[in-house]
Length: 426
Figure 1 (tube, rainbow, N blue to C red):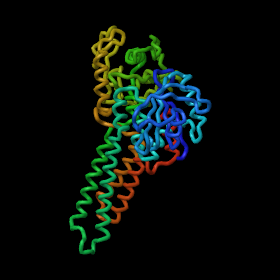
Figure 2 (figure 1 turned 60 degrees about the vertical axis):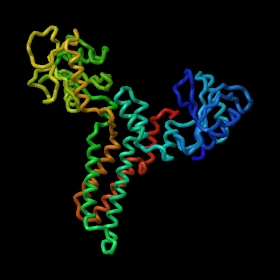
Figure 3 (figure 1 turned 135 degrees about the horizontal axis):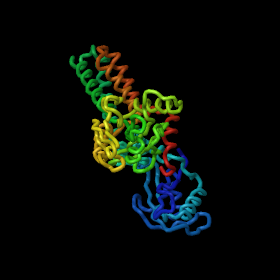
Figure 4 (figure 1 turned 90 degrees about the vertical axis):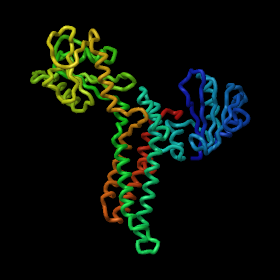
């Protein structure tokens, strides 16, 4: 990359402060063109910014200079901390756009340069993407761990271990007839090392998925018509998301409502009432979709008879206790009066805690899980093989899986899709 890029890296104006970032070989000359001189590296200096075309004053701002390669992008980097008004930002960006070798950044281009220059691997990039989109505290914590490289360091440990095991395997193959041959127990040590590594990868694969953390724990409210599902949904999410009526079969289709409870993301789903038969074709379609939702549910809130619960782990509810006198099994609650609601929320959070990453844990995306699964498959096969030639080949394939995990073997199409989801200033 020989061109340089610039963009507003702070929030959209108007704001108290606007941070404009410049990255690339023209970052230093651009800073000199606007501020007259470079400040000492990594020291902020108050300076007057002028338009290089006519010398007109643009703003008084703090300027910072970060010479590469020890920067977030791996290139020369400059920052202008100016006033955050729309006119100020527009004037400075217009002045920058007139400088040779400088252009506006595309979405995610700063982060892409950090990846290309080895400042971040693909796992850290995905963590940063999740951090920017985080809406709950659990999402923030898990994304921050990934963005700061906790998982990347573990993968790097796997890579180093794989290289050691591969070297030992090659030594056992190439020098088996030499006087300085490794001791006879080397094959056993190779097998034990491979198995230990496979066990570690398997433990990581047991971690919760990032998709569930991002999209929310899927909670399906199900039961017969007029059981109070829609009223309960509205109470849980704190707004009138579903139509409530005394007419049986009011809910014809799935209604999905995201909500956060106790710092965890949930996706609540109201479904059509389930019954044995219906002459209404639309209601029949709604019931079929309701059964599909039940199959994909993480948690089921069942508002019907206990013996008709669709799964053994469904949470049994006895709703409408403010107007029902029967002693049916399940948690007694009323979405109207609020009776039983704190207990239900506590139960949901307890179930969710088993499905989401805990404190200090990270969650894996499908891409990461697929690459780690491939890695585990090669390691598991190598661990049980007694042919060192086959072991050597399986370890080579395992190293390729590591490269997929870090992004060293990623395709341009996948990278384009990932970085396009970033904001311009990232």
